[in-house]
Length: 169
Image 1: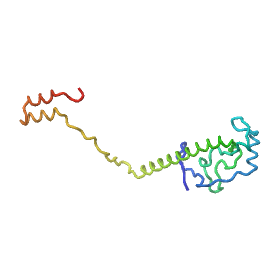
Image 2 (image 1 turned 135 degrees about the horizontal axis):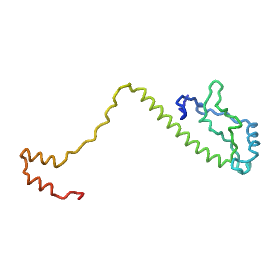
Image 3 (image 1 turned 30 degrees about the vertical axis):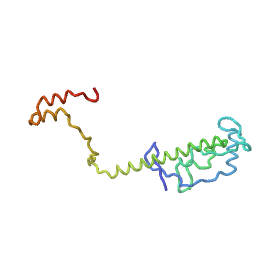
Image 4 (image 1 turned 90 degrees about the vertical axis):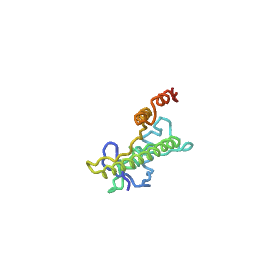
């Protein structure tokens, strides 16, 4: 069973199993429409014949905590206070946002779990491994002065090399 780590606390919270979903009873659907007075949240009348009506859980079921003892989410999946009747086009738009938010939550959860595993593997006081060094280039003038000091070239040859135009100037 998958768990998620909420932002507010770092305690693990159970979430509903994959595919877990209770159907909404007809009495609950009718009560939701009556409570909304037959209107969508934006105030337009709900049209069941031409547009259609979908019922949306707010917050979505995948974002609720799950109680395995009662096989129910907290708040309950079919609680009238957490269900909204919406026109089909509006519900499709909101559901698309839910899917992207659901996948983002899963990605963040996996990053958090991997980070916690890395922290647990690390021994206290252990130094971090070196990721590498940036290779340095020797300065050309130092090489030329070294060549003069060892007698490989003369100072006139070094001056002629250093007076050559460079790419940048």
